[in-house]
Image (cartoon, one colour):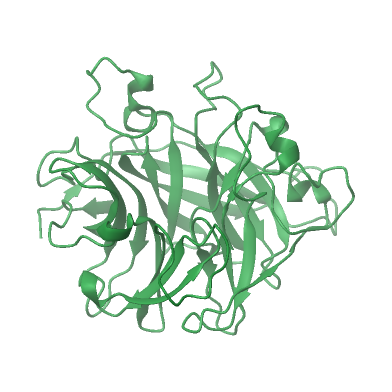
Length: 396
Protein backbone atom coordinates (compact mmCIF):
# COMPACT_ATOMS: atom_id res chain seq x y z
CA UNK A 1 0.00 0.00 0.00
CA UNK A 2 1.31 3.44 -0.86
CA UNK A 3 2.16 6.05 1.76
CA UNK A 4 -0.95 7.87 3.00
CA UNK A 5 -1.11 11.65 3.07
CA UNK A 6 -3.54 14.11 4.65
CA UNK A 7 -5.19 16.57 2.30
CA UNK A 8 -5.33 20.23 3.30
CA UNK A 9 -8.86 21.45 4.02
CA UNK A 10 -10.56 24.77 4.44
CA UNK A 11 -13.63 25.54 6.53
CA UNK A 12 -16.50 27.32 4.86
CA UNK A 13 -20.16 27.69 5.75
CA UNK A 14 -22.93 27.75 3.19
CA UNK A 15 -26.46 27.74 4.62
CA UNK A 16 -29.41 26.56 2.56
CA UNK A 17 -32.97 26.35 3.76
CA UNK A 18 -34.27 25.08 0.44
CA UNK A 19 -37.80 25.02 -0.88
CA UNK A 20 -41.10 24.14 0.65
CA UNK A 21 -41.23 25.91 4.03
CA UNK A 22 -40.37 28.89 6.18
CA UNK A 23 -37.26 29.97 8.06
CA UNK A 24 -37.00 29.32 11.81
CA UNK A 25 -38.39 32.80 12.55
CA UNK A 26 -41.68 32.33 10.67
CA UNK A 27 -42.25 28.60 10.74
CA UNK A 28 -45.68 27.75 12.10
CA UNK A 29 -46.75 24.67 14.09
CA UNK A 30 -47.53 21.78 11.76
CA UNK A 31 -45.36 23.17 8.92
CA UNK A 32 -43.23 20.66 6.98
CA UNK A 33 -39.96 19.56 8.57
CA UNK A 34 -37.11 21.80 7.48
CA UNK A 35 -33.35 21.46 7.57
CA UNK A 36 -30.27 23.64 7.13
CA UNK A 37 -27.24 22.11 5.38
CA UNK A 38 -23.86 23.74 6.03
CA UNK A 39 -20.50 22.95 4.46
CA UNK A 40 -18.11 23.04 7.43
CA UNK A 41 -14.98 21.63 5.78
CA UNK A 42 -13.82 21.52 2.17
CA UNK A 43 -10.60 20.48 0.41
CA UNK A 44 -8.72 23.14 -1.52
CA UNK A 45 -6.57 20.46 -3.14
CA UNK A 46 -7.56 17.10 -4.63
CA UNK A 47 -7.58 14.01 -2.47
CA UNK A 48 -6.65 11.73 -5.40
CA UNK A 49 -5.38 13.10 -8.72
CA UNK A 50 -2.88 12.64 -11.51
CA UNK A 51 -1.51 16.00 -10.37
CA UNK A 52 -0.65 14.71 -6.88
CA UNK A 53 2.86 13.47 -6.18
CA UNK A 54 3.58 9.76 -5.75
CA UNK A 55 2.80 8.75 -2.17
CA UNK A 56 0.22 11.49 -1.78
CA UNK A 57 -2.89 10.23 -3.57
CA UNK A 58 -1.32 9.88 -7.02
CA UNK A 59 -3.13 8.28 -9.95
CA UNK A 60 -1.51 7.33 -13.27
CA UNK A 61 -4.84 8.10 -14.94
CA UNK A 62 -5.29 11.68 -16.12
CA UNK A 63 -8.99 11.39 -15.30
CA UNK A 64 -9.63 9.89 -11.84
CA UNK A 65 -13.00 10.89 -10.47
CA UNK A 66 -16.55 10.06 -9.29
CA UNK A 67 -15.54 8.25 -6.09
CA UNK A 68 -17.61 5.77 -4.06
CA UNK A 69 -16.42 5.16 -0.50
CA UNK A 70 -16.84 1.68 0.95
CA UNK A 71 -16.02 1.02 4.59
CA UNK A 72 -13.42 -1.38 5.96
CA UNK A 73 -14.22 -4.94 6.97
CA UNK A 74 -12.30 -8.08 7.87
CA UNK A 75 -11.25 -8.60 4.24
CA UNK A 76 -10.93 -4.99 3.13
CA UNK A 77 -9.04 -1.88 4.35
CA UNK A 78 -11.66 0.64 3.19
CA UNK A 79 -11.31 3.27 0.51
CA UNK A 80 -12.60 4.70 -2.73
CA UNK A 81 -13.74 2.95 -5.87
CA UNK A 82 -12.98 5.41 -8.67
CA UNK A 83 -13.88 6.02 -12.29
CA UNK A 84 -10.71 5.91 -14.40
CA UNK A 85 -10.04 7.14 -17.94
CA UNK A 86 -7.18 8.37 -20.08
CA UNK A 87 -4.35 6.45 -18.43
CA UNK A 88 -0.69 7.20 -19.07
CA UNK A 89 -0.46 3.75 -20.63
CA UNK A 90 -3.61 4.17 -22.69
CA UNK A 91 -6.85 2.25 -22.21
CA UNK A 92 -10.51 3.17 -21.88
CA UNK A 93 -12.89 3.50 -18.96
CA UNK A 94 -12.64 1.22 -15.91
CA UNK A 95 -13.02 1.26 -12.12
CA UNK A 96 -9.99 1.49 -9.83
CA UNK A 97 -9.31 1.69 -6.09
CA UNK A 98 -7.40 3.96 -3.71
CA UNK A 99 -7.06 3.07 0.01
CA UNK A 100 -8.45 5.74 2.31
CA UNK A 101 -8.85 6.13 6.04
CA UNK A 102 -11.42 8.50 7.51
CA UNK A 103 -10.21 9.92 10.84
CA UNK A 104 -11.44 12.54 13.30
CA UNK A 105 -9.02 14.99 11.72
CA UNK A 106 -9.98 14.39 8.09
CA UNK A 107 -9.41 11.75 5.47
CA UNK A 108 -6.14 10.16 4.39
CA UNK A 109 -5.77 8.48 0.98
CA UNK A 110 -3.00 6.54 -0.69
CA UNK A 111 -2.05 6.20 -4.34
CA UNK A 112 -4.21 4.32 -6.81
CA UNK A 113 -3.78 0.57 -6.26
CA UNK A 114 -2.16 -0.75 -9.48
CA UNK A 115 -3.33 -4.31 -8.78
CA UNK A 116 -7.04 -3.53 -9.05
CA UNK A 117 -8.69 -2.80 -12.40
CA UNK A 118 -12.36 -3.66 -12.78
CA UNK A 119 -14.59 -3.66 -15.84
CA UNK A 120 -12.20 -2.42 -18.50
CA UNK A 121 -13.74 -4.88 -20.96
CA UNK A 122 -17.17 -3.24 -20.61
CA UNK A 123 -16.16 0.39 -20.13
CA UNK A 124 -17.19 0.38 -16.45
CA UNK A 125 -17.91 3.80 -14.95
CA UNK A 126 -19.41 5.55 -11.92
CA UNK A 127 -19.37 2.99 -9.08
CA UNK A 128 -22.02 3.18 -6.34
CA UNK A 129 -20.88 0.64 -3.75
CA UNK A 130 -22.08 -0.26 -0.26
CA UNK A 131 -21.64 -2.90 2.46
CA UNK A 132 -24.79 -4.78 3.45
CA UNK A 133 -25.09 -7.91 5.59
CA UNK A 134 -21.45 -8.90 5.05
CA UNK A 135 -21.42 -8.36 1.27
CA UNK A 136 -20.17 -5.49 -0.86
CA UNK A 137 -22.61 -4.53 -3.62
CA UNK A 138 -21.82 -2.20 -6.52
CA UNK A 139 -24.07 -0.54 -9.07
CA UNK A 140 -22.03 0.72 -12.03
CA UNK A 141 -22.47 1.84 -15.63
CA UNK A 142 -21.42 -0.63 -18.33
CA UNK A 143 -21.75 -0.94 -22.08
CA UNK A 144 -24.78 -3.18 -22.49
CA UNK A 145 -26.27 -6.02 -20.49
CA UNK A 146 -25.01 -9.52 -19.74
CA UNK A 147 -26.42 -12.31 -21.88
CA UNK A 148 -29.39 -13.88 -20.12
CA UNK A 149 -30.37 -10.75 -18.19
CA UNK A 150 -34.06 -9.89 -18.43
CA UNK A 151 -33.51 -6.14 -18.87
CA UNK A 152 -35.47 -4.75 -21.82
CA UNK A 153 -34.96 -1.51 -23.74
CA UNK A 154 -32.17 0.83 -24.73
CA UNK A 155 -31.24 1.97 -21.22
CA UNK A 156 -29.92 -1.39 -19.90
CA UNK A 157 -26.57 -0.06 -18.75
CA UNK A 158 -26.57 -0.25 -14.92
CA UNK A 159 -25.12 -3.51 -13.63
CA UNK A 160 -25.29 -4.79 -10.07
CA UNK A 161 -22.64 -7.14 -8.69
CA UNK A 162 -21.46 -8.33 -5.27
CA UNK A 163 -18.43 -9.78 -3.48
CA UNK A 164 -16.93 -10.36 -0.04
CA UNK A 165 -13.40 -9.63 -1.28
CA UNK A 166 -13.63 -6.26 -3.08
CA UNK A 167 -9.97 -6.02 -4.12
CA UNK A 168 -10.16 -9.27 -6.06
CA UNK A 169 -11.66 -7.95 -9.30
CA UNK A 170 -12.48 -11.46 -10.48
CA UNK A 171 -14.53 -12.18 -7.34
CA UNK A 172 -17.34 -9.75 -8.17
CA UNK A 173 -20.41 -11.83 -9.04
CA UNK A 174 -22.86 -10.40 -11.56
CA UNK A 175 -26.45 -10.19 -10.28
CA UNK A 176 -28.40 -8.31 -12.96
CA UNK A 177 -28.55 -5.40 -15.40
CA UNK A 178 -31.15 -2.68 -14.85
CA UNK A 179 -32.79 -0.18 -17.26
CA UNK A 180 -31.65 2.78 -15.17
CA UNK A 181 -29.15 4.35 -17.61
CA UNK A 182 -26.93 5.51 -14.72
CA UNK A 183 -26.41 5.06 -11.00
CA UNK A 184 -28.13 3.21 -8.20
CA UNK A 185 -28.19 5.10 -4.90
CA UNK A 186 -29.85 2.93 -2.28
CA UNK A 187 -31.40 3.25 1.16
CA UNK A 188 -30.86 -0.05 2.95
CA UNK A 189 -33.51 -0.52 5.61
CA UNK A 190 -33.65 -3.03 8.46
CA UNK A 191 -37.07 -4.08 7.23
CA UNK A 192 -37.61 -4.02 3.44
CA UNK A 193 -38.51 -2.57 1.10
CA UNK A 194 -35.22 -0.89 0.27
CA UNK A 195 -35.35 2.24 -1.93
CA UNK A 196 -32.95 3.04 -4.79
CA UNK A 197 -32.70 6.35 -6.66
CA UNK A 198 -31.47 6.14 -10.24
CA UNK A 199 -31.22 7.86 -13.58
CA UNK A 200 -30.34 11.07 -15.37
CA UNK A 201 -32.49 13.64 -17.10
CA UNK A 202 -35.11 16.37 -17.04
CA UNK A 203 -38.61 16.77 -18.39
CA UNK A 204 -39.21 17.60 -22.06
CA UNK A 205 -40.81 20.86 -20.92
CA UNK A 206 -37.65 21.90 -19.11
CA UNK A 207 -35.29 20.70 -21.85
CA UNK A 208 -37.28 22.82 -24.32
CA UNK A 209 -36.25 25.93 -22.40
CA UNK A 210 -32.59 25.18 -23.14
CA UNK A 211 -32.20 24.44 -26.87
CA UNK A 212 -29.55 21.84 -27.58
CA UNK A 213 -29.60 20.30 -24.09
CA UNK A 214 -32.09 17.47 -24.65
CA UNK A 215 -33.76 15.19 -25.11
CA UNK A 216 -32.52 13.42 -21.99
CA UNK A 217 -32.62 9.64 -21.53
CA UNK A 218 -35.14 10.05 -18.70
CA UNK A 219 -37.49 12.79 -17.53
CA UNK A 220 -35.67 13.15 -14.22
CA UNK A 221 -34.72 10.84 -11.35
CA UNK A 222 -36.60 7.60 -10.71
CA UNK A 223 -37.02 5.70 -7.48
CA UNK A 224 -37.60 1.95 -7.14
CA UNK A 225 -38.07 -0.55 -4.33
CA UNK A 226 -36.76 -4.05 -3.77
CA UNK A 227 -37.03 -6.59 -0.98
CA UNK A 228 -33.77 -8.35 -1.80
CA UNK A 229 -30.59 -7.12 -3.50
CA UNK A 230 -29.73 -10.69 -4.49
CA UNK A 231 -32.89 -11.43 -6.45
CA UNK A 232 -32.77 -7.77 -7.56
CA UNK A 233 -36.43 -7.47 -8.52
CA UNK A 234 -37.06 -3.71 -8.57
CA UNK A 235 -40.41 -1.92 -8.86
CA UNK A 236 -40.46 1.74 -9.83
CA UNK A 237 -42.77 3.80 -7.63
CA UNK A 238 -44.00 7.39 -7.82
CA UNK A 239 -42.43 10.30 -6.02
CA UNK A 240 -44.80 12.22 -3.76
CA UNK A 241 -44.76 15.58 -1.98
CA UNK A 242 -47.21 17.77 -0.10
CA UNK A 243 -46.04 20.71 -2.24
CA UNK A 244 -46.01 20.05 -6.00
CA UNK A 245 -43.04 22.42 -6.47
CA UNK A 246 -40.84 19.92 -4.63
CA UNK A 247 -41.34 17.49 -7.51
CA UNK A 248 -39.67 19.90 -9.93
CA UNK A 249 -40.38 21.98 -13.00
CA UNK A 250 -42.90 19.68 -14.71
CA UNK A 251 -45.06 19.44 -11.58
CA UNK A 252 -44.76 22.98 -10.23
CA UNK A 253 -48.08 24.78 -10.51
CA UNK A 254 -49.94 21.62 -11.48
CA UNK A 255 -51.16 20.87 -8.00
CA UNK A 256 -50.13 17.24 -8.48
CA UNK A 257 -48.61 15.62 -5.42
CA UNK A 258 -47.29 12.59 -7.31
CA UNK A 259 -44.92 12.09 -10.24
CA UNK A 260 -43.09 9.22 -11.90
CA UNK A 261 -39.94 11.34 -12.30
CA UNK A 262 -38.36 13.90 -9.99
CA UNK A 263 -37.62 16.82 -12.30
CA UNK A 264 -34.99 19.55 -11.99
CA UNK A 265 -36.29 22.81 -10.52
CA UNK A 266 -35.48 24.89 -13.60
CA UNK A 267 -34.51 28.55 -14.09
CA UNK A 268 -35.60 29.75 -10.65
CA UNK A 269 -32.81 27.67 -9.11
CA UNK A 270 -30.44 27.54 -12.12
CA UNK A 271 -30.95 23.76 -12.23
CA UNK A 272 -31.31 22.24 -15.72
CA UNK A 273 -31.07 18.46 -15.16
CA UNK A 274 -30.58 15.90 -12.37
CA UNK A 275 -28.36 12.88 -11.90
CA UNK A 276 -28.56 10.53 -8.91
CA UNK A 277 -25.51 11.14 -6.75
CA UNK A 278 -24.73 9.51 -3.39
CA UNK A 279 -26.55 6.76 -1.54
CA UNK A 280 -28.94 8.53 0.87
CA UNK A 281 -27.85 8.70 4.51
CA UNK A 282 -30.14 8.79 7.52
CA UNK A 283 -30.48 11.79 9.84
CA UNK A 284 -31.06 11.62 13.59
CA UNK A 285 -34.70 12.53 12.97
CA UNK A 286 -35.12 9.38 10.87
CA UNK A 287 -35.44 11.28 7.58
CA UNK A 288 -32.89 10.72 4.80
CA UNK A 289 -30.77 13.14 2.77
CA UNK A 290 -29.78 12.37 -0.82
CA UNK A 291 -26.99 14.42 -2.41
CA UNK A 292 -27.37 14.70 -6.18
CA UNK A 293 -25.69 16.54 -9.04
CA UNK A 294 -26.67 18.20 -12.26
CA UNK A 295 -25.83 20.91 -14.77
CA UNK A 296 -26.77 24.46 -14.04
CA UNK A 297 -28.51 26.70 -16.53
CA UNK A 298 -25.21 28.38 -17.45
CA UNK A 299 -22.28 26.57 -19.02
CA UNK A 300 -19.55 28.77 -17.57
CA UNK A 301 -18.84 30.44 -14.27
CA UNK A 302 -20.82 33.63 -13.71
CA UNK A 303 -19.89 36.66 -11.68
CA UNK A 304 -22.07 35.37 -8.85
CA UNK A 305 -19.66 32.46 -8.37
CA UNK A 306 -22.55 30.04 -8.03
CA UNK A 307 -22.83 28.32 -11.37
CA UNK A 308 -20.80 25.86 -13.34
CA UNK A 309 -21.32 22.99 -15.73
CA UNK A 310 -22.20 20.71 -12.80
CA UNK A 311 -22.92 21.47 -9.16
CA UNK A 312 -24.49 19.58 -6.25
CA UNK A 313 -27.87 19.76 -4.56
CA UNK A 314 -29.81 17.74 -2.01
CA UNK A 315 -33.26 16.41 -1.20
CA UNK A 316 -34.72 15.36 2.14
CA UNK A 317 -36.80 12.16 2.05
CA UNK A 318 -39.43 11.09 4.55
CA UNK A 319 -38.38 8.49 7.13
CA UNK A 320 -41.57 6.43 6.70
CA UNK A 321 -41.86 6.77 2.93
CA UNK A 322 -38.52 7.60 1.29
CA UNK A 323 -40.31 8.28 -2.00
CA UNK A 324 -41.80 11.40 -0.40
CA UNK A 325 -39.80 14.61 -0.85
CA UNK A 326 -39.83 16.83 2.23
CA UNK A 327 -37.41 19.55 1.12
CA UNK A 328 -34.85 20.23 -1.59
CA UNK A 329 -32.04 22.62 -2.50
CA UNK A 330 -30.11 23.15 -5.73
CA UNK A 331 -26.51 24.32 -6.08
CA UNK A 332 -25.43 24.20 -2.46
CA UNK A 333 -21.92 23.11 -3.52
CA UNK A 334 -20.44 24.54 -6.68
CA UNK A 335 -17.05 24.42 -8.47
CA UNK A 336 -14.57 26.78 -6.80
CA UNK A 337 -11.01 25.46 -6.64
CA UNK A 338 -8.65 24.85 -9.57
CA UNK A 339 -9.05 21.05 -9.53
CA UNK A 340 -12.83 21.56 -9.93
CA UNK A 341 -12.78 24.40 -12.46
CA UNK A 342 -9.63 23.14 -14.24
CA UNK A 343 -8.02 26.51 -13.57
CA UNK A 344 -11.17 28.34 -14.69
CA UNK A 345 -11.22 26.45 -17.95
CA UNK A 346 -7.66 27.42 -18.88
CA UNK A 347 -6.62 25.56 -22.03
CA UNK A 348 -3.10 26.91 -22.56
CA UNK A 349 -1.48 23.87 -20.93
CA UNK A 350 -0.44 25.59 -17.71
CA UNK A 351 -3.12 24.05 -15.48
CA UNK A 352 -1.73 21.09 -13.49
CA UNK A 353 -5.15 19.43 -13.33
CA UNK A 354 -6.70 17.25 -16.00
CA UNK A 355 -10.34 16.37 -16.55
CA UNK A 356 -13.07 15.78 -19.08
CA UNK A 357 -14.95 19.00 -18.32
CA UNK A 358 -14.19 22.21 -16.44
CA UNK A 359 -16.45 23.73 -13.78
CA UNK A 360 -17.66 20.41 -12.36
CA UNK A 361 -18.58 19.02 -8.97
CA UNK A 362 -20.20 15.60 -9.22
CA UNK A 363 -21.06 14.46 -5.70
CA UNK A 364 -21.06 10.65 -5.45
CA UNK A 365 -20.59 9.54 -1.85
CA UNK A 366 -21.68 10.52 1.68
CA UNK A 367 -20.37 8.84 4.84
CA UNK A 368 -21.39 9.43 8.50
CA UNK A 369 -18.50 10.96 10.44
CA UNK A 370 -19.54 9.66 13.87
CA UNK A 371 -20.88 13.06 14.88
CA UNK A 372 -24.67 13.05 14.59
CA UNK A 373 -25.89 14.58 11.33
CA UNK A 374 -22.41 15.28 9.98
CA UNK A 375 -21.30 13.54 6.80
CA UNK A 376 -18.05 13.35 4.88
CA UNK A 377 -18.67 13.89 1.18
CA UNK A 378 -16.60 12.76 -1.79
CA UNK A 379 -16.97 14.20 -5.28
CA UNK A 380 -15.43 14.32 -8.71
CA UNK A 381 -13.84 17.67 -9.54
CA UNK A 382 -13.53 18.75 -13.17
CA UNK A 383 -14.38 15.17 -14.18
CA UNK A 384 -10.78 14.21 -13.42
CA UNK A 385 -9.94 14.66 -9.72
CA UNK A 386 -11.36 13.77 -6.29
CA UNK A 387 -12.49 16.30 -3.69
CA UNK A 388 -13.81 15.93 -0.16
CA UNK A 389 -15.58 17.92 2.53
CA UNK A 390 -17.92 17.70 5.50
CA UNK A 391 -21.51 18.90 5.81
CA UNK A 392 -23.60 19.44 8.92
CA UNK A 393 -27.38 19.02 8.74
CA UNK A 394 -29.52 20.80 11.35
CA UNK A 395 -33.28 20.59 11.87
CA UNK A 396 -34.76 24.09 12.05
